[in-house]
Image (cartoon, rainbow, N blue to C red; front, side, top):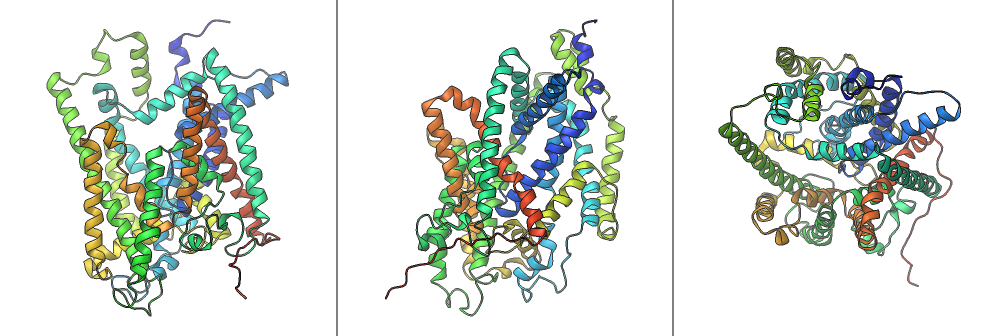
Length: 552
């Protein structure tokens, strides 16, 4: 058989296979379920791109080995096919992350409308829209392609001409390249074994917990680890393998920032503000009212998020502009085809990167067209179901799996969907202005907005030894509304990673991503059977709950 050249092996069409599309769909569905759970519980979703590449490798290697044992010859599994599968899977679950199912789309429903207060000024009567598969799919299909087409004219300029770094893509590429080497194959076997082991443990643990979760506030997820008083302030360990795994993936700074935010809000601020009932806000109002304690929780969270977001937006804008200006000043932009002195491998990669791409004029016209459709057509298209794509169909269906099976949006339940009420109140704030805020809330918001800006500035301008200890305002904001329980889970994950690195840093660097992915995927996959049981009205047989001892 003639040996294939590197140029032939790089051809994209040969790497888009039926098995690759099937595996992409499976991984995309599994990860859509996982990120939807994260979206609807805390709204905090770690980057799962690297674990998607690992799963793609696991699936195809298992596939090819089973076929080999059956005596069937299969196409060799290449790093290009691995990359295509990972890219398709990430594109699929990214719609579940950024599609607004836990934020602005859910913020339109009746429950969030009522939580914001029916009598609240700016929350117009009847201004709600219940979720529906049809209009959500159509909405996603239209708006998702605007960003995709906008990137086409930028990708060659930014990545090839100006050679700007792409950290997430680089990390994934290094991992995939490592898999497809003789040494990497041995490494991958260890990772696959670790992944499957902890995937099984996590799935079985979720199954075991289910038996004790019959009824509200039952089961291990409401275990008063530090006592009932701490439990009432959301300080407890809820035995969630998903968040332990997420804590292993996230940096120590993120996890510590989450815990700091939980302590500051639920340990200090909310008890103190609750004591002002009857002074700062009427004692007759329920705690869930936006003019009561819940208003402080929501708007202070928004202030932290806005401060952090604005700072990082300005920072990225300034640094990108400076980088492009320096490149332009050093030399006039030239494409890869103009530089004949580049190594052959670089020329081939550049050729593949732009080969058979969407023409620039098509991208520009498409961008304008979809932008116009997004602006004009969307308000009139809710009664229609427009075309479909894998992510745009899987994401709404995944959302409805949760929406129908669980009590999504309950502020006291597991699926709080915290960002839905945040987005609703941001809209009300935009309409009514600061009059929508409870007493003294504006001053507190000013303070936390300033804190977010200053904290980011201090981290950037101070020495590395000092800057690494400055907390992340965006991470601190999440437990302000959700609670501190998941921050404890994530800190346990962080502690596991820290200890593992101290004992055996080399093995930890290899196995932590695989073990964390196994914990996340196992617990996430249990959602599917538990949702089916909930839809079938099959309740857990036991309720494990805790009460204070009655004094005699």
